[in-house]
Length: 430
Image 1 (cartoon, rainbow, N blue to C red):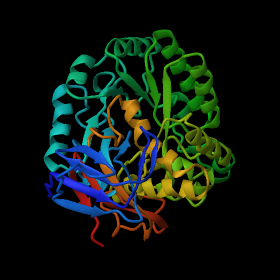
Image 2 (tube, one colour):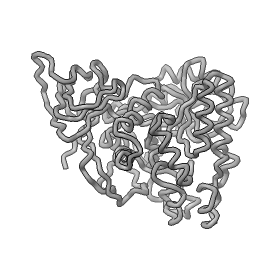
Image 3 (cartoon, helix red, strand yellow):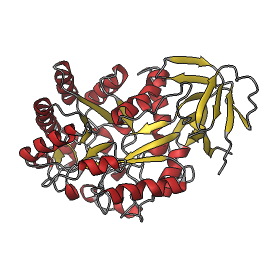
Image 4 (tube, rainbow, N blue to C red):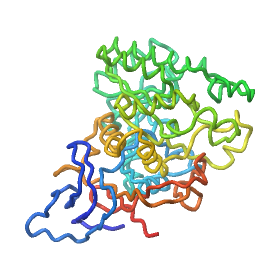
């Protein structure tokens, strides 16, 4: 692995959401930090110079939700394979949910994940700590110990706390430690047995549906509890326009809540399920075109704080059963940036806004000083060529998960270099 301690990145278009800078400027790195922007300091002689002509230079992407499958499901993927794919995708920091095996409800498991990622050295992994022991929703986890072990947030992954009393106590306890709680807004009783959005397409196909109310009911409860307790909550993966309205109303009252959206929800709708492609089986389900358009507008305006991959790699067998019986989830690391660029091409937002939602926005949700490229900041850098076209295929993906509905699609935009703490952790040679 390259170990250059001094690097100059020249001739690129630098975009730094934290400072608002957007223009051509050289970036000089030393000892894992940004040393200077523009002219190099007197006497600075870089060990390596990267020519970023025609490329965008911006902070490394921060992904709020990526399942790495290790520990416990290594037949699907490993920390090594998925952080390597992340580096190829310009992602330098990943937050992984706690639904591993064993669950991330002890400092030992949290430290194991971080140590394994550090050993491979491709990307920084920040595990979300479990909100309750074994994610069973009954007994609170040792939140202080998990925070001390490096968990920046707490989460139930995709599992709901059924007891409102326990949910309230969990938020109160998390608030005392200043920890944000990630919540998946899904009422399990209403969603039980469903695999697609409840609507016209589900009726036509005869598939069990998940109604909009399964999301909005959960959002209403969690917003009420956040308002009552003063806790900081973050909704992981909103999918409906009504939920966005509820979030905006609560935030206007001062409720400390934010949300993100998965990239596939901005391109796919319930109509894409019509062919019964199991790669379109996701939770929350693909919703209507009007929901998709509302999510796009909310991301552009900042009502949604972050855009994430919601990466869930699966082995081939997991997608071979009849549609309702297949495992939900999309392998999304390596299509995150190129699909994001398509939002720019479709005039949904400008490129600086896109970069902000992929870097500074998610970093602030995590409470981490990442997603910045000012002088003195950590040298996590993505150098991205927006002109380069490529086709999504098993041969062009590094992730062990090939479960993508975008397989076979030609996309524009390819990462050329990724740097983590000033080290080149990915370099494209093709």
